Length: 97
Picture (cartoon, rainbow, N blue to C red):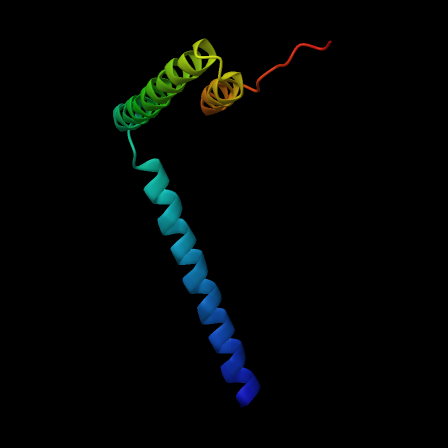
């Protein structure tokens, strides 16, 4: 008797999972191409805003670095300039001597 109830519970759970999976797949199909275009366009706007913030911060670091270098404080200037490059996702390259 207990085995039968466990089997029925397992079958019910399986049917429930299949029904839920079908519901989820219908939700993915419901989005239109126009909605997809809007979503992607919004994502590009957000990425550009983030990039603009990074660019502005990198330019500020560059100005500080250049000022340090001009005042013969090259170590601080080099750090600022290297940090500006890192902020932009660029690895600073040192010439091989």
